Length: 268
Image (tube, rainbow, N blue to C red; front, side):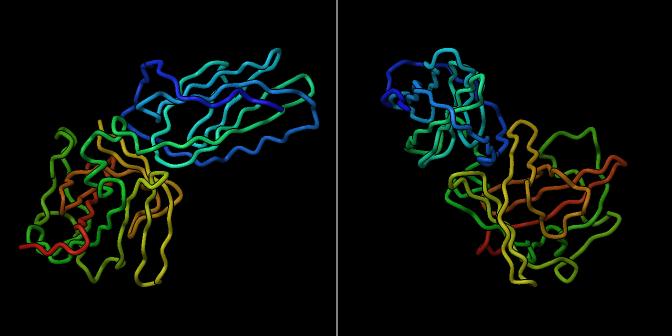
């Protein structure tokens, strides 16, 4: 097998950046048969912006398929975006009449994509990508120590409105009613979300997606502390350097907010 030499190109390309990231693991395991075929393909990166990667299949009379960990492509020529810094393996499959043949090449991305992660919520939530831990806001004064519960909600209100009343809701829970622990978000190679259950002494890591248009985030492969079983996504209602309030919205006109603060922060 052979592949073209990797080089950094000066070609400028326009890449459509979505406002949300759906994390995916390198989950493909395509069986490769014993087909003898010289593979010819090109994987190059944009100079000065090496998150942008150009893929080109140069092998004749095959159907190409690419797997780059955070996504896949079946185009002979494609431009992809790899948002995360680090080493990444690009797999190239060439489908013949007798089955697929595979080769791969490693590339290095110098930094998390400053364009993709430009919205301030990425920095606030994850500590500029390096990792940030949030704990229950047990000493909050605004909600009289309430941390979660079910309260009224106005569906007509806009995103980022704290549109519930902590004092006149249906049911509120304080520190004795919730599972102690923390949530940690980072962008170290993927959108990681780690839940620490202090009662059990167990940490579990999954992934999350964040939509910076609607301000919904979705845990993937992990369950939050005191999360209801049917909850799949949560709307961020408040996110500052020190406070994180997100909520599950019910279709019957209520919502469940969760009140967290930055680990180490003390309310004045």
